[in-house]
Structures are given as C-alpha cells and as structure tokens.
Length: 161
Ligand code: 4NP
Image 1 (tube, protein in one colour):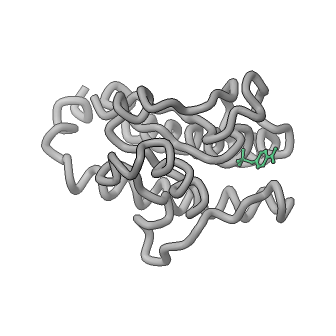
Image 2 (cartoon, protein in one colour; image 1 turned 120 degrees about the horizontal axis):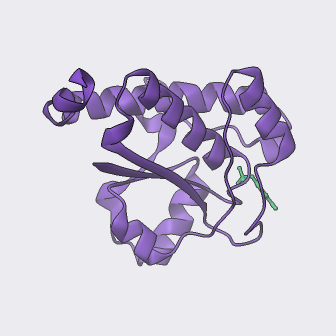
C-alpha cells in the first residue's frame, strides 16, 4: 500500500482536484487496492469546507466525481504518508517550516515529475480552473508513471486481480 497526500494552501481547489484525478487514474489501471490517496491544506482557513464549486464543476466536466472535506495537514500526516505532493513552491516552503526542514525526501512538487517542471497554476487567483486541471492531470500522469517505474514489482499482484 502506498500512501499519497496531495497538499495545497486551502484544500478546496488544487489538492482535492489532484486527489480525485489521481484516484481516477489509479482506478483506470485497476490499482486502487495499492493506494490510499487523500489531500490536505497547509492552512486551516477552509477547514470543513467542501470542494470549491468551480473546481468541482471542472472535475465533473472531465468525467471525475467525488467529494472531499478540507482539513489542515499536521506533522503526523507527513509521517504517516509515503509521498507528500504539493502544488507549488509556497506549499513546499510551508511544509518545510512545519517539519523544521525534515522529511524533504518524501515531499515533491507535483509537476516536478513532468518534463516541464513548474508550479500548478493557482486558480484562486487566475480563475482559470481548466489550466489548473490541465497542470494537475499532467502532473498526476507523470507521478503515476514514476511510481510504476520505481515500484513496478509491488503492483504486479494488484494489476492481475
Ligand atoms: P487551494 O486554493 O489552495 O488550491 O485550495 C485556495 C483556497 C483558498 C485560498 C487561497 C487558495 N484563500 O486564500 O482562502
């Protein structure tokens, strides 16, 4: 079982989108039993909120359904997950502040797995939820490819059943 946590600032736009997109990709490959996927915010400002409606509408337009309730990440969540996948450099700095610089070996920016490393465009400011979705899909696809290459053996059993 690989535990993956996606992280953004508020946990109402980018990281729940990444959570649901990644779950969908994993399911399409028949690997859902191999993963536990969730998401968090570095801030508690939206704690308890549902996915922001424009983000949810964008997911639905791409055939992806699901819900999430926003929650703030704690040090325990960082310890308990194998991969902490942030959306931008600001999220990365916030997490390193929380850990005192530790756990750097399991914290990655989502689009660092792509051939065009970049921040996920923040739709809170751009209002461009399609662009955020595109960055997130690109990053999730590349992250899953990375995991399949790194941990291919671990998935053999699940993909047969
Ligand atoms: P998210 O978007 O980090 O992608 O969930 C934001 C949500 C709320 C705020 C900023 C970004 N805010 O400032 O409240």
